[in-house]
Image 1 (tube, helix red, strand yellow):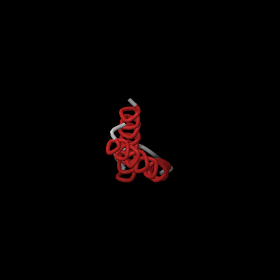
Image 2: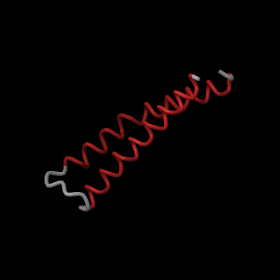
Image 3: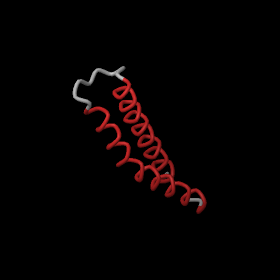
Image 4: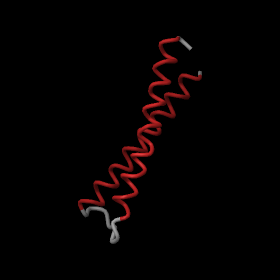
Length: 69
């Protein structure tokens, strides 16, 4: 049960990273209207903050899977 919750949270965090990275790319290319360019900085910053969390959750999931919990 714990393993499934950890996996679900890891998938959700990874999806958020994808959304923020997509926002940064769309804002940087001009396809997303952002007159001041805050979308680029916010997307990169949020993705950078969430990346270690996603890696930690993935490692926790893998260790729980190996242990059979």
